Image (cartoon, rainbow, N blue to C red; front, side):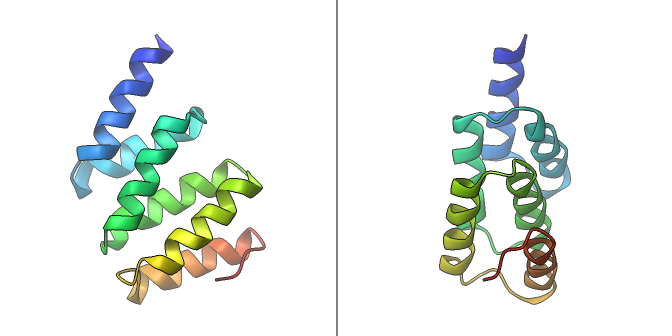
Amino acid sequence: DSSNAKSIIKYNIDSANVETLEYFVDKAKHFKDIEIINSMFLRLEQTDNGHIFVPIVETILSYGDTVLNKRLLESIRANKGIKGWGLEKVTQLLDKNGLKL
């Protein structure tokens, strides 16, 4: 059921390694669930690995929610570990969605 799916997705967003995280972040696109979203923001704010933060940014942007987009910009600005190729990719994603850092 969807409750079970949500808890599995949330658990894996909280704890999955770089090899499996993208799969679960992609599944999160189907659930605009606050617990899942908060887990994604927590990972985003604590990582410097582009293979983790880029898929999270893609998923949050997929919701098309102005409040989440504002929070996303704040989180990206606050995380000084978002740099290099990952920052370039994030900037491209933001541009596509009409957002600027």
